Amino acid sequence: AIALCLAAAAHADVVLTFPEAYVFEGSRGHSVTTGALTGRLRGVVVEFTYTDASGSSTAYDVAFTLNRHQWGGYLPFINGADLGESPTYAPSLPDPITFCSGELGMGYEEDFTGQCALVGFGNGNMGGGCTVTDVTITLLGVVPTPSAAAALGLGGIAAMRRRRR
Image (cartoon, rainbow, N blue to C red; front, top):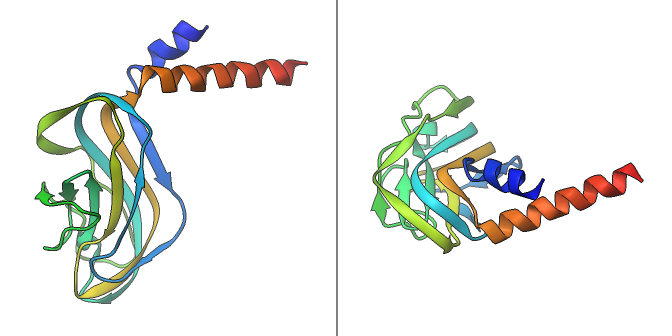
């Protein structure tokens, strides 16, 4: 049963969800560090709901980061990113809007062999504010390291055994 769990996990992507509401002034963001990852990262998919625009901020300005890479935003880098990738293609109007990017590439692929990643999102516009909710960031092509996946698999099996008793 454990081998099946690991084999299934090897073909999955890492999905991070942030259901809370985040209020961002210009150039501010929120970030988290993942557990150890393995695989070849080929890009990301981002989803979010954008509301309460103020100043010159629009949904187009919502930026997403992975380590040094940033997708979206208008000029400023957030969360320590310094490599601009493609825009997310979120529209400027309307407000509110729920948006899903589709696959956003990196222009190359990046190998992970047990490293953690700094992943985040925020307002990539210096001149405004907004509220961002229901954020989902999918890292395409990477999975938790085998030891992390095994620990999750064993925890799941233990939980199933406890329920049966």
